[in-house]
Image (tube, rainbow, N blue to C red):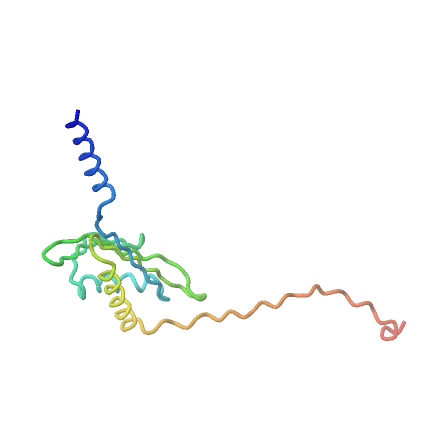
Length: 153
């Protein structure tokens, strides 16, 4: 009777170690920049290919993504850069969402920082915010009653 109980205990320990043990890191970093996505996408593709030396696997400007492979430490890590159209301070902006499988978040954060520097060099500093003048509430115009002294009546 003792052997099955020990076996069950061993199985329970292994199962809990698998369920609650360390897992690979799944980081995801993002940054929002006030540039139009139409200008950011081609610059981001050039950045990934030329500056970061990754292999572009697939890209789609209309859908706003680039899938790539990063070779690091003798291994290949799949990654994706998403470009999400948004708005920042009343101007067009793009949220860059970067995910590289099995790499720590500082790898993604560093890559986003370098991409931001490249965009500032190529596209200039972010355009000024669009100033929106406050809308003055319109008071309902009430018709003036005729002035009997003016009408000559």
